[in-house]
Amino acid sequence: MVKLRKGLSAGHGFNAWLQQRVTAVVMLLSIILFVGLFALAGKVINSDITSWQQYFSYTIVRVVAQITVLAVILHAWIGVRDIVMDYVKCMYGRVILYTLIILWLLGSTIYSFYVLW
Amino acid sequence: MTKKVKFSIYRYNPEKDAKPYFQDYEVEVGDHDKKLLNALVKIKDDNDESLSFRRSCREGVCGSDAMNINGRNGLACLTDIADLKQPITLAPIPGLPVIRDLIVDMTQFFHQYHSIKPYVIDDRPMPEHERLQSPEERKELDGVIECILCACCSTACPSFWWNPDKFLGPAALLHAYRFLADSRDQATNERLDNLNDPYRLFRCHTIMNCVDVCPKHLNPTRAISRIKETMLARNV
Ligand code: SF4
Ligand code: SF4
Ligand code: FES
Image (cartoon, rainbow over all chains, first blue to last red; front, side, top):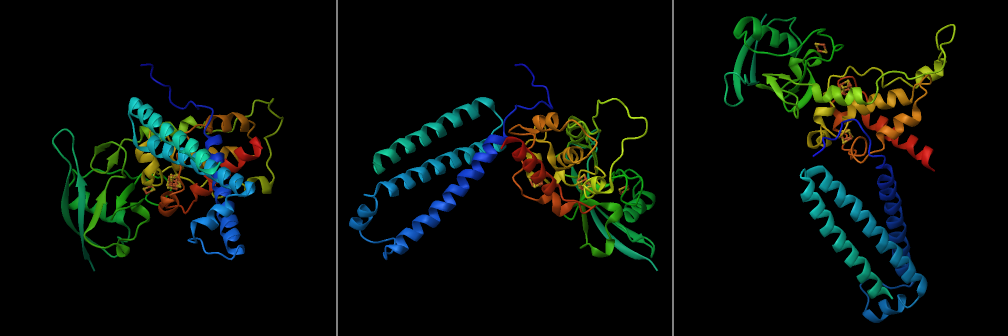
């Protein structure tokens, strides 16, 4: 294999860092929003299924929930990839792990659409 | 009056020893031997001339006697014996290949340092007089130019342990910031491009071991955040 010359930059890294921060803010905002929503509705979070269904019959609630799920997925991807980059030295090991993680996160994304809509 | 000080010191001579081991020493130090380095020099003089370690300035300027002291990186010449629990356990700074005893191979560390181009880059024609800097511009460099490249920080950084060949480590990043912050330097874009990499800069997870151990009380983590802020400013 070609030996990578040291001291060269891959030209990215900043984007992942920024996305991680932006998604964290989105997650924080939606936690506040949802807690507020439940509090406003005068219900506790573990209330019965019909009131849950009622909340989620509003499109705006679904949209916010979907955005949150997407933020969680992207955030998780960057975080888990960071861990793999730190600890897994073997290139093929990484590729396999990335593939498994991507498949899992992609599955979760599709499933979240299925659940919410 | 003399005092006895107990030590347990990492020993390894690759030419003789199959494995590293710890050796116990007890040394008599006088009233003027306040610093750990004094005691080490005593051990070398009185007990065991084969004990190897680096030192030069003996006053926290050259950065050559960094070692792991009771589990924490520091400079032997700046560490008071009186502050240390005995037996004082000494080991080489972690994460770099050991050459012998407390001496490590710093090639990797300096390679990362050189890769950030640690000099002012300015290709404009030379002015008739020197390139001036206002007192305010000079002030920007306070807290970064004091670094003596002792490697206490980088070798205390888990990210540097895992990826010493790809992650620059706090010391080199501190210097990267030092040249970004220099009003005379004209290579901001190139410098930022060179740092925009998943490893070189962004392996830092803000663990802050570097800040904790720096014997010059510098703050590499802050410098790293400043670099990220500068990138943000360029990108948005
Ligand atoms: S930042 Fe501090 S610990 Fe790190 S190399 Fe410089 S002086 Fe040593
Ligand atoms: S703050 Fe960054 S550079 Fe400093 S010890 Fe932690 S990971 Fe390393
Ligand atoms: S001997 Fe120079 S820094 Fe300690």
